[in-house]
Image (tube, rainbow, N blue to C red):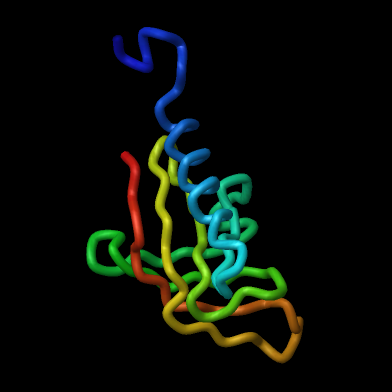
Length: 107
């Protein structure tokens, strides 16, 4: 039996599984920042590099640091990226630009 025939959306299961597994790392220093409800071009800007395996992202949010993860959605595709480098702007202080490396993709 497939998930789609049973009425279960595989994308929702995938995102839930990622969030569950990453939240199990509570005692580690890495956090996952969910940007799937944000709109690209309005809430953040993502510039993909190397066929979406890397990218530069500009966004707002406090507490994002190197080693954290960022979850993005493009249509029905979900992308999990690891923050390799991040620099915060001086004004506004919660705005940043980061270099991201793909950690996992679900298409």
